[in-house]
Image: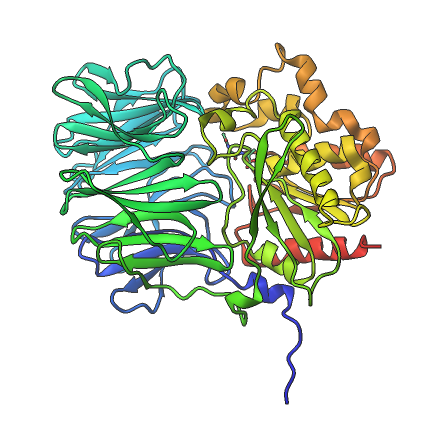
Length: 595
Ligand SMILES: CC(=O)N[C@@H](C)C(=O)N[C@@H](C)C(=O)O
């Protein structure tokens, strides 16, 4: 018989990501953004045909796709090499090369907000002239006029919903990830969607339904729920909540007068259908554990984009939310889901008795190399979930067990829990990680001599901090674009993040002592284990200097540090060849330090 060799690293990384999609109203065209040819481009399928063809070639990351309701053009947002300065392009309905439509200096950002029902007016936000708070403008495609309709003030302000008659506008103002207020502007009048905008709460996903605005909020509640604002009476009221689940997205089915609701329930999502007139709530079964986008079209058909731990991104369609047809066949080259690892959902008690949920991916016995990778996730107000990561499945196949805790500050466990990381980046979450490590040892999952530490972004920050303060636990450490010094990080973030930094992280003058205590650079002396630092040169969130300085300082101290800098990447690795380079280098590094 012919025997085949073990899957290669490249095999895992020949899996593609689908980051977004959009379906035309007549359901004849589905356009999606994916790196099928190695770089991010737009691909299309002429439904019901599901063979994808290259629709728009630009080789850059996409921020949105919007199909003209009358199928004359497609709008899409692209940045440059991961710099997140997204600008708005137009593409002919048949596809081709994206042509700049609403663009400016390469350092400016343009975000699509709304396209009018007749496809003539484009509502968008821009950093031009107002980098921290953003301005809202409308471009009329008939006469090419472009006028400002709202000047952002106080905090970054986003136009999020426009009524059908284009006379009422809902804006969201962000003071933090956990503090977002909403107001509706009708002529010169503005009304808060919630009773007291000075109370800390979030408001998002506004939808106009006749004279009512439905939206999601956690106003006076631990879990976000659906509420409404009556435009006639100007009254706020609660519509629907689901026990212990945060409603995260709201998609309106205009034809059948129902909502599709997506809830975040710890490490996975649930999808529900809510009939507005009968008030009946129905939980739907879904083909994947984590759903990243839901679109309902005119016919009432539902399209979702999602992934599970062993299923990469795919797009599915259903006539009414029951029974799904898989439209894309994105899979891991030469592997079945059984060849991969489904995580166990575990929980452990932290230093103060708080229960922390985590994902434990155990290497299969035939692959097990005895080593564990400890993975603090990024965000930090995000969470590790049951979603496919080629990096995880590749490392599992190489024998590493992976442990990913949803330390305090993670999303999916209620409003109070997510706030616990605010102005406390380095104490509570770090101690949750330490408790997790001790739990791994106590439960004989990990050998004390066989633990690696790998994290990206906030996870990279946590990797640096844990390395500096608890190096004894680890054999070696990989930091992927982690902030190394909170004093420099707080001043280097994008302009429209600056207004939220105080509540999120703190103030460098007022909180000087805490910034010193929680900055990884404070603990250079403790960073004695071999380290690999990986950084994208164009990263606008955690800038290159954050990695440069830690590498320089450790090198000057004679420590063992490797540095991989990717010139054409930002906060993530969007180009296939770069991804393969990064993860091969990581594997090589881990293998070298297994000892
Ligand atoms: C403002 C905010 O929460 N940004 C996050 C999405 C983010 O990018 N955080 C970085 C630091 C990360 O951890 O990914």
